[in-house]
Image (tube, rainbow, N blue to C red; front, side):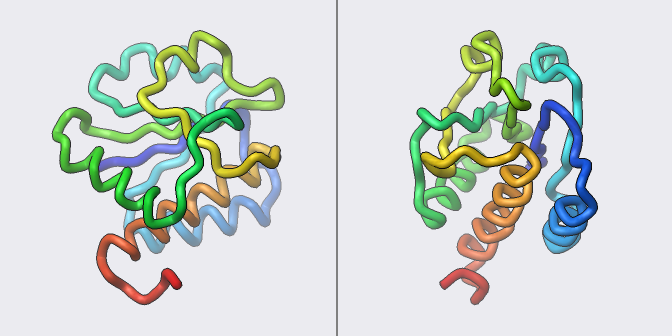
Length: 138
């Protein structure tokens, strides 16, 4: 299944780009980063996507729970891709939040959107290691 992190804005700092690229490489093309100026425009025609919004008020999951959430979405057959949506400085619009299939919080802390992309990318990588019973996760 394709997984995309849709970011309102851009990854600007080279150290964030390098970290994200490293996990993308490890995921063998399974993960794509989409930089856009309008998330709502990007997702408006995504009828077969499972949309996960990153929101402070969302549900927090452990790394194992996160892995099983991804597995459950993949096994459901209801979607052909998973879209993780990360807002810019003002967060996600109410219109975007209303389209969410799952509201997810990585923490009660607020992160720069570039940091959130890197952390989420690593957690997606960790999720597949968990699901494949590989030793990365402790």
